[in-house]
Image 1 (cartoon, one colour):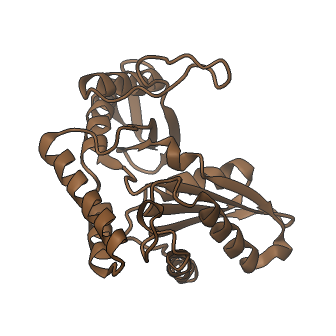
Image 2 (cartoon, helix red, strand yellow; image 1 turned 135 degrees about the vertical axis):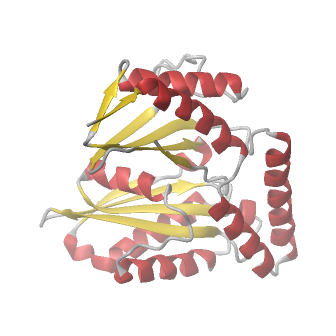
Length: 280
């Protein structure tokens, strides 16, 4: 049994909050650059040029890629052979977010109550997701989530009779309805199956998968490819100005579900779909 002090997780979360907000992941940068070369509509190409310039400035000057530095979503894969010591895990994660947003001079965007509002002043609490996995490591993934894109997300409790066509239609309708609001080119995370809440979690988790990694099931890998093609034919384009680049990628995660249902959730990420991961 390996012991790991939660202070290590705290410090890792603090650092990843800053890195995720100032350094766009390599997979997202690569996708933007690839679509930049393929985009033949001059206005759309100009917007992509500005996006590339923006993430270069953010990296060079160590400043946020976007003014919305997001709500901190922290995914923890905890090995079952790890004994966490030194305090409460959730307290450690929230302290890491608190320090990261303070030390990185990142905007604090969390309110204490959804209706009565009131800024918490330190971007806590984080949204924390934990999985128990084999082994003795802890994998920490920090994904700051802005709400221009989060607000365009949706879930639908499809019936089994809706079939694949119902899934396709719901995803495409959600993206088309989102239009320019999520600051495209967007990343589309899709969760299919499980229960109402699990489908939404899968869609959020899908956004953490690198864009150059396809679903390991060829059936869903082909559906990802097909949906990306159809989304880019919608003509929304970068920042909604038209063109061939509405989405950078589509990632689908699935789970078994009940015989009577087929939940489907779409979680949209903007062109600044941020995620930083570290194995402890």
